[in-house]
Length: 231
Image 1 (cartoon, one colour):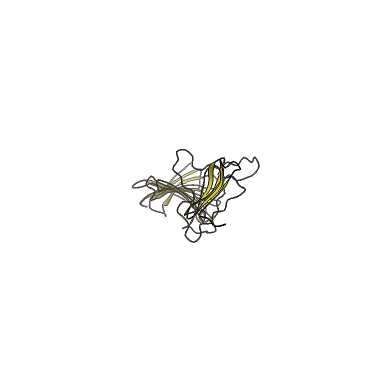
Image 2: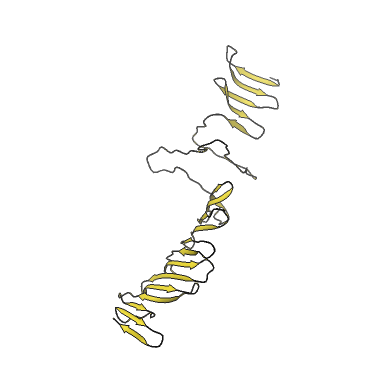
């Protein structure tokens, strides 16, 4: 069969079922409407696509947009109606690098959220240039930062410093911290940079020391040149 145009129609000749045009589209029809058609770049689907799975392989040079639309409202809706243990959306990448993203969310091409292959999570400020809320998976560290003379809030509980909370000026000139470990109790630090001095301690016995790391009473205040009062 050799022809520049091929059409399969119904018995009455009133409805096209399949049509192919030389150097053009091959189209499948439903009730006289084209639903699936080939194009110079791929295929066009009109209507709803239903299937057990969808595999997209972008090849060596993946397209910028796998799903692209201009309609108002919701572009993509994922609905898992299973009431059992299941995933509405599962994203996976083989890379575990901090430079590759499992998920990147943007608006008007400005970064809003990134989930990296190594597990780091970053939320960005309004310009999308600087992450202000970050989770470091390797360090198990959550940090909230600001700009200018703002402060960074960094709660943590690592084996290296047992810090529960850091509050630090953005330029690193001042810092406050609350630290906890089993032998020293609860310690409060202020001033300086990352090595801010300890100012007060509640030891494992419940004694409170101000300017001393070895309180000898319920309240022990130490001064520069002489021991303060015991309470």
